[in-house]
Length: 178
Image (cartoon, rainbow, N blue to C red; front, side, top):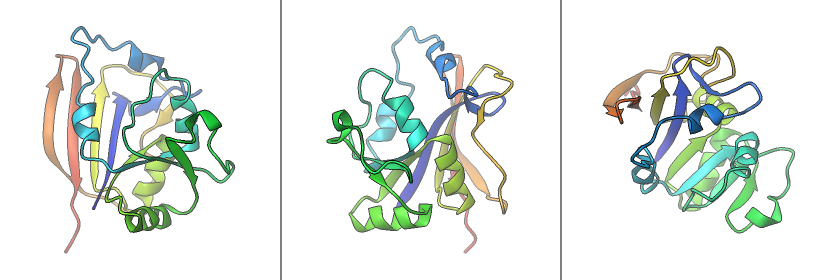
């Protein structure tokens, strides 16, 4: 069972602008029309857990890039907008409760997405793998990938690659004491 984060971040550690904008990600040169490894990553995923703010951003992007069920963490929404109701559903609870519930449903490999959601899962030590693609831009401010942590979490670098001579994608695995 693996809980994975797969995210793009600026050099200074932001995943979106203050208003949630991600236009800077769309400005990455992509002459080969690469998905930068996303399709390979998503093949190993059983379900996605994302925050409501991230889902609201997803609803503004043309197309749908999730071939697996999507669970939207929200305490304010009771249901997903009708146009997405066949693809996504609302889920409530702490990160631990959500993971336990989805594992009980048979979902073993979860993609954790969205700034606040990632931070909540990290605070409860529920992230097993982090894949961070660094985009060569300094945003100066915005929504940070990481926040304050109650404890140190140790990860080991398992893979690092340069993509299109522009991006650096690093995958880290959580090191847990035995």
